[in-house]
Length: 349
Ligand SMILES: *Cc1c(COP(=O)(O)O)cnc(C)c1O
Image (cartoon, rainbow, N blue to C red; front, top):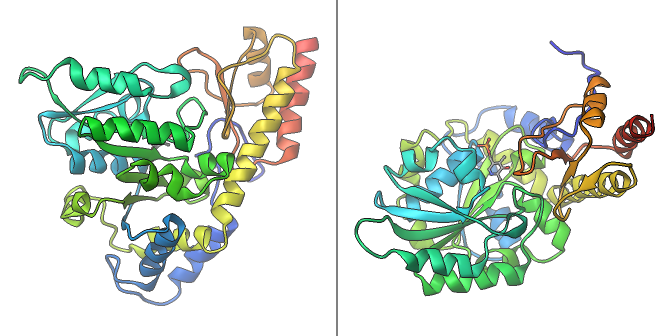
């Protein structure tokens, strides 16, 4: 086992532990017995809170992870001969090992190019119209990632414009919100403005990177799409027997706004890191930091020096081989200062 004093890293927001609110809620949910398969009080309260957050009567399903949330959403939207448009760097297409096609029995994904990790409306129209013949999969859905894989965010207007195009082309609109909280904290708008009011039909609402041990919620804003989804989740192996342990964390995060505090804190640390890195000789910050990810290119000696001092981070996530540095809910100002101190001293050496 690693030492309990192991330092926090900027490698990924899934390296962080369980936030105190969620840890307490899990302990509380563990006291005594409660019905299985979602017939418990935590599940009912978590659903109520999610409806309150989105200010609408949505259908909510808890699942274990993001790949399942996205893949089962794809299966709900598409038939085997249909396809989903998404950004070429979308987690759906790059990091889910073909799970969407597996769960949807053959549905394919088409990655579209677009600046800053975002899909452009014209690219959607073009892809939807390019081939309409039976030899090509029928385009049936569009999936957007919010915040994006490159750390940027779609504004409500950008999502609404994509929502219009999706409607015109008769496409379902899915949002991969593994970092929805970070996008929301960055934009300071109402959750409805980023989702159903902009045309989103189904959201994979991320809990893991917001301070849970695991757990995402699928939120359907279109009840027709949610019809029979309970069967699909069960068949897909994602119905938790002790569902209360997937639901109680949502109650803990949503009931007093902890989810947005954690996301805002992760974003703020990333912003400090970005500011500091811009002052380090030889470092170039890429894209636009809008949520909790900073991408930066550095001289190889600087990367090696940081790693030699124990810092861990990925350089194979984005398309440009840049270091990706993520703020997490528990990242402190001291963590950022320590990283910047090392980067600065190494760059000046
Ligand atoms: C982390 C992440 C997911 C979820 O991944 P799982 O490992 O399956 O939980 C989905 N989409 C994006 C953009 C992510 O960053």
